[in-house]
Length: 319
Image (cartoon, rainbow, N blue to C red; front, top):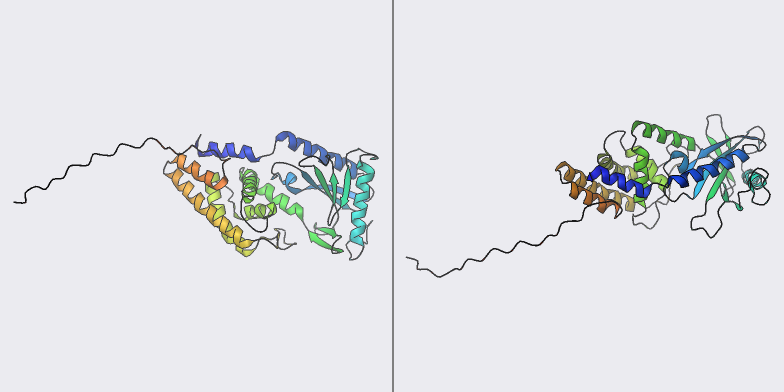
């Protein structure tokens, strides 16, 4: 199989089923078709990992941004009740246009819950192991193309630019066609890192933007990533658009750094083994790094060679 073939096979265990991706996009498009008809809505923006094409299996949510006309909702963006008003408006539009019992465009949403920044819309029955949801976030676009996002918890609005990340991922993948697949590999790897706090997938995605090269093989790129990311994580993993600060303020930085350093050691060993034409050993080392789903030949444990006979030693005369 070889190292490249092993990476190809491993990727298939991580990438989402194309049929499920198609279903997620179809449901997303149903939401877009309905919500873009709402009064005062200027556009519906696709967001999240599905739009960046860095999603892991199973696909259980889709993110949409509902951009309202800033003139029509002039009070939005101010502190106080306007953030609740925005989430309430988005909730009502979802129920009116997509509600399971009364939707005027399509009957799809079983339940719509107003959360801090978005309305979480449940599509699948609750007994599903991974019920599919769509998060609809109402925003106002500013002159610099950034977005004002409401928070019902703080009763304030914050600035963000998720479209910047989407574009940066697109450009990186345009330069290096392995970028999106390797981002998915790294997001999957993070789930095995032992830490008191979970590591958000977006942390790994931003580290990938900062530390993955724009050319080269997957093994060499991963060797470079783990080494560079172990340094970068100490500096803080922040919003690449420069608006939101730290992506995960409660991140266990020490645990992630140690895991990245351990991974860097294994990646170094695997690349060195491959350079010495020890393909089997390289695959086994990548398996040690990524887990049993990474294919590798079993280590040979053939029968031991018989021991050489011990010569008989006698006490011969010394002279």
